[in-house]
Length: 337
Image 1: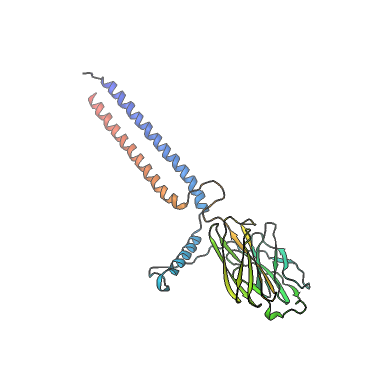
Image 2: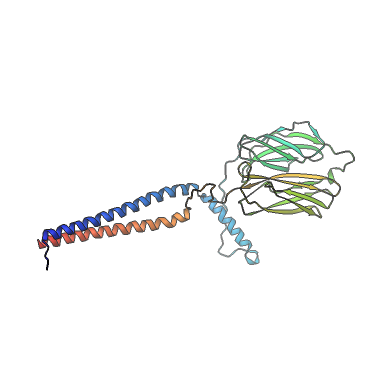
């Protein structure tokens, strides 16, 4: 039987303990490094995550959708609807019409209205208080949009809005005239297109629905809808009044800030025509990016952080246990010495 000297036994024990200490130190270092990486991913995710108000607004929208599917036209008894709005900046500058000029007269629709505006805002153009079109204000701070005037006097105004329908200052009115063509019908039977919405937002692959109303003219009507992405459709309407058009965009908007112009033209049975241009914003869905960089969501990080903390505590506990065991072994070896 081989008998190792006591000092040799202590040396081997010390080497084993040193090896264990080194291994645990390496594990702690790796876990701490993972913590640093996790923190680096957490901060950008928090910075890009929706605000509490936006979360509440989305929750309210989801609840409204859910309630619409509940039988008996009501919400569940436990349902609580919360409405919250975190608005973008309200436009501070005016959308000023620079063309046409006050006093001009026209005989043909549409008439191009252009001017200056706060870049990135959505400009509504009105005639006599009636919305006749909307367009995005491009990066150089200008807008241009063809609109239909009504026969007679037209008081044109433009207002810059944000996406929550909060408007900036109204522009000074520009007063122009549209003369009826010789032998044409009067104002009461003029054909008009209207919409309660001036812009709609949607993500690629999702359908967007626009409410449109035909006013005046003589049925039937032919309506051409140009969606702005190279596709269009022709619709027949047998009576005036409201109707809807629906479309699914496959790609992001190609215009400024991801927009597509929605152009609607209508003609009635006796030759009247109408024109309406609106704005569709097609942007990535929440959380999507246009690059290949992958950023974990806040929900994913909420799951990862507790796992990392538990792992770190386990390693520290084992390391402390090994330190305690080492001290006990040293005392036992000293007693045998």
